[in-house]
Length: 371
Ligand SMILES: Cc1ncc(COP(=O)(O)O)c(C=O)c1O
Image (cartoon, rainbow, N blue to C red; front, top):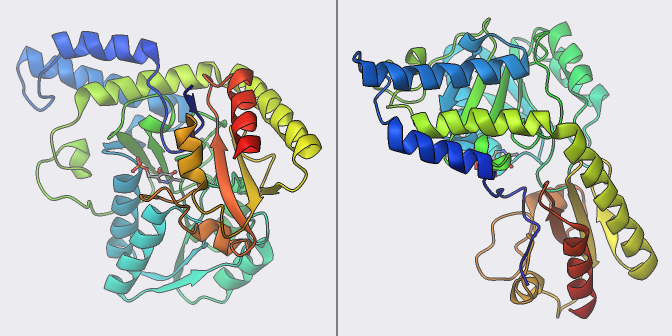
């Protein structure tokens, strides 16, 4: 039995994407910086991918830059903004991904900029009034960094409301959109964000490739020094085949989004219903009706249920507790701590995908009851 319910960590490659990559690997190995025909073919691949992604997000292709994934995009933007603009305060929240939290801490310290963390409630939601007050009392420019959808508890940020507040005070707005790209509609046409992020392996594309959206109004310094690839924003030979594959995976995800979302919500409601009626001691963490593919359940904490993840693994169920874990025991999650539940529950994150079936959910519940 193998039931993969860890699609927030990574997803299985789409078969059409594998076929496409295979063809490209056989036929297209040029370096897009070469001026001969082989290089020009590779360049066309990269530019077609940029056009596809830009048209889905309704932005200009000049605002899309390719990177090695979410972590690099975050680090490039955070370090670039703090080096290039006169930022006097960064405002964020304790439930951001480690890539964001650590990059903010590092770069704020290096540039002597104040980092302010908003409070979050039990569902992981920030208070918009607190955000507005904090920006309004700051002298100088503010960078707001708040994720669109949380990768552990599914909390959704009201993107438009946060954007309105940022625009009112001329603050820059960065949103980690890694978990929403390909799963929720993201329309950047009216400039609601200054910076957004995508990572292909979260939407059935390959690992180690991603993109960043940098609104054309913003000019920031690059993280990597070297060649002039990506219009001087990201040095290094482009990962051409993965970039092309990412655009393909993104197109597939967008085309099938509505159908996938309906199926995922149905599976989620089925799971919630069965847990509520058969396992009433189990609670739900965060925003149950947030990210459609994700649900985080809380198992009452006892001394002898520490090795839960390992027990699921032995029984062929692949789930996660949230943050990285190496021993089979559940490591404390900074997100579960931030919503004040760390002392009472052990969290299990179930992240489904278009490949998840009702049988998978039944198998998960069977093992959950057994262990
Ligand atoms: C919300 C969020 N941000 C950033 C990342 C990092 O992305 P990547 O794995 O492409 O570096 C992840 C993935 O783990 C994520 O879930």
